[in-house]
Image (tube, rainbow, N blue to C red; front, side):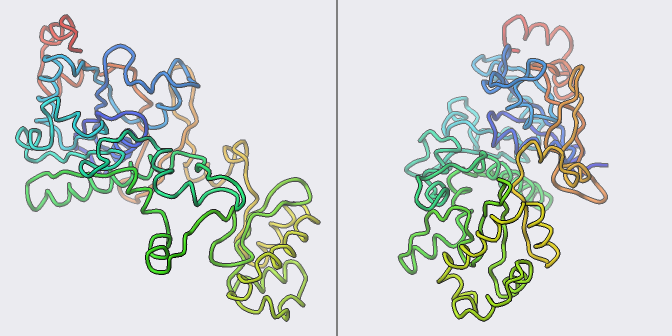
Length: 394
């Protein structure tokens, strides 16, 4: 048994945010059909590196899906899509606003075809507003939201986060909105529109930056790896050339840090007696901690801090992450069979006790499930499928 068994999802999206949203629904047991152009499929399939001829960039966000290749520029392809929409529960798209309308498949049109349909529209800036038609990718959202200005060294330039954080977060918001709309459908019998954007998703992660700016006129900007609210909490270099992150600045944690360092006199230093005073003298207290860490190796530092109950970690490189025993134990890294190899990928991240998420299949080949989907969803016969192929609609 799965949470979304029996739910049918059409995934018209590409790149990351939309495919990730639809993949999450697939992990929960929905039947997800990825709609993409015949031949080479979605453009992102051509990104490097590749495994067995398939881009890893697309591989990691397109598992648990079937592929139906349709030429949406052809009338035959659009007619097939309309038939699928009539039988779907969810449609996910992340075209630029207005694209679905040009296809004759905006919200009003699809709602008329299937009043129970939940349509998730993922875009850079939302379906309306002065910037609705501006082109957007993850980096643009990071730049415009303030995330980049808040990221990086204090005396360095604005810096992108090391992953496509806005894409992934927007995909998760979209999936959450879809689940809410499906739950509302139980009572109303009607689907609804889910509208999420990269810019708003990015802005939702700004912590206290917005109220601080509006209320006090203080602009939150880059502080490197420092905690913005307490000290000492930072990333420190160690004697063996590694780095350790420690969060030890509040009034419960600082005495533990002092015990780990074996520097009890610091508790009597008037500069360090409270969370407020330590923040005022953060250069001094973090300088002392930094000197201590430079005199020891990373593993020894972590062992001492953990013995005192101080939250800390050695900064892991990716080659260490893939061998992390906790991630392996929790299934956060999973080996997915794909052709004659097994591809290690991020596993499911939501653990349900009665209806667990699962990875049932790897990324499909382009059009791999054409006949299966057309037969099961639309009842097409072999001659009808052949006719669509002949006219280039699939």
